[in-house]
Length: 83
Image: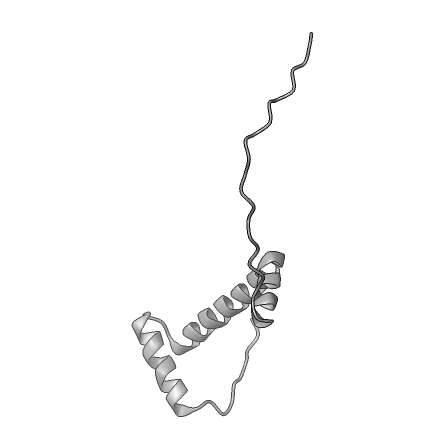
């Protein structure tokens, strides 16, 4: 396994991380691994969904267009086939 060193962490963030790790019964190191794993998994799951990606882009552009749905009429009679 590789190591990763993160410098210049805000002391308040470190304290919150320590509390979060304790709440979950994990070490701070394991808590950071879990957070990173979940963040990367969520990111890749979102990027693979084309419909969600398009919806996010449209949302940023001001939403979509509301179209009026025309009323439905009676259904047609199905065709009759002779034998």
